[in-house]
Amino acid sequence: MGVFEFISGRKKQAPGQLAKERLKVVLVQDRIKLSPELLELIKADLLTAISRRLEVDEQNVQISMARENRWDRLQADMPIKRQKVSFEWDPPAHTTAANVLRGKVQVEVEREEQEHS
Amino acid sequence: MDSRVITITSGKGGVGKTTTTANLGTALAMQGKKVAVVDSDIGLRNLDAVLGLENRIVYDIVDVVEGQCRLRQALIKDKRLPELYLLPAAQTRDKNAINSVQMEQLCQQLRREFEFVVIDSPAGIEQGFRNAIVGADEIIIVVNPEMASVRDADRIIGLVEAAGKPEPRLIVNRLRPEMVRRRDMMDVTDVLEVLGVDLLGIVPEDDLIIIATNKGEPVVYDKRSRSGRAFINAAHRIMGDEVPLDEVAEAPTLVERLRRLMGFGPALAERRVRS
Image 1 (cartoon, chains in turn cyan, orange):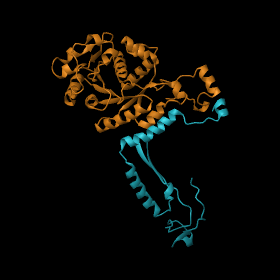
Image 2 (cartoon, chains in turn purple, cyan; image 1 turned 135 degrees about the horizontal axis):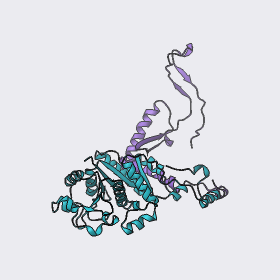
Image 3 (spheres, chains in turn blue, cyan; image 1 turned 180 degrees about the vertical axis):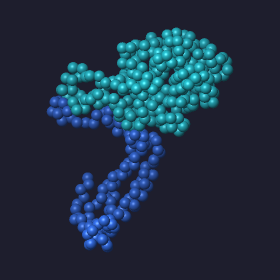
Image 4 (cartoon, each protein chain N blue to C red; image 1 turned 30 degrees about the vertical axis):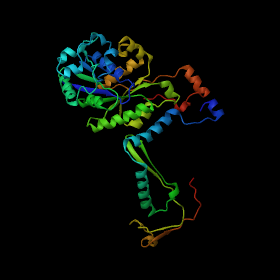
């Protein structure tokens, strides 16, 4: 950052960079005709699968497609709700602690407010 | 004869296909290769003018395909180089005057006579484009570092793949190093990251290209021109020679350094030689 840039506090995304980011998105849409409806279906499928194990903050789930190096990438951003979780755990065979060798492990996580913005 | 048919295409118009074809063809012929450059842009003939051969056309590609003349009669010999020939496009016909089968046969015919057949494709993705790639062993895509051109290039890459051709290589044309340094233009690495194909050459924007075209003399004849040297390097890479990709690498001038210091350009850490 040069002197003037520093003084004025200017720090925007460079046009060259912006072009690249816009291209990545538009090329995915060009290449595979993935309609918003289909994307919603995929989102629902993912939520169903993930929700069996973790409680997902459904309001803030984001699904998008992007492209890099000729690969189309499905990106899912799923914030997890922090709350008391309880799940069954199969301890690895090498675990020596007797109290976890058999049975269920309870994990207690203190309930907190959502931090996701 | 061991022969290679190379098609120069782009999707988008005006990115420099014809200039690239003329210069790569000329550069290969300068290396002693026997070269035919073919204008497959029927109805919009231009390769002849870029090469300065527009006054010598008697027969054209459609005449050959339709059997109005023999291939040898239609080929125009470039007097400056003993091994360079042009097969011009027809100007008064449209791009459906030739079909894919005829074009493939024509390529086979040319293979018997030449080491390199360099085909200038029309813009677009219709029949003319399909004809241009049908007989090709290799495809070179010309792209400018701007959105519309890169987007079209991606489409072409998909169509080339679908046609069962090997992965095309890229010539990034009309790069403006100044704008890249200011980060106002996509860099070569950005274009490659988005398109994910191999690079064959980088050609900087150069006024000398317009001057060369005005004279009908490809810019590779001008040894001082940066664009000419870039095309010569690309031609060497086509022949399989190892040439470092340093076409646009050059030390920043004093004015550029000052500007950068004042904050009108990228910071020191971002200023590096790009390849």
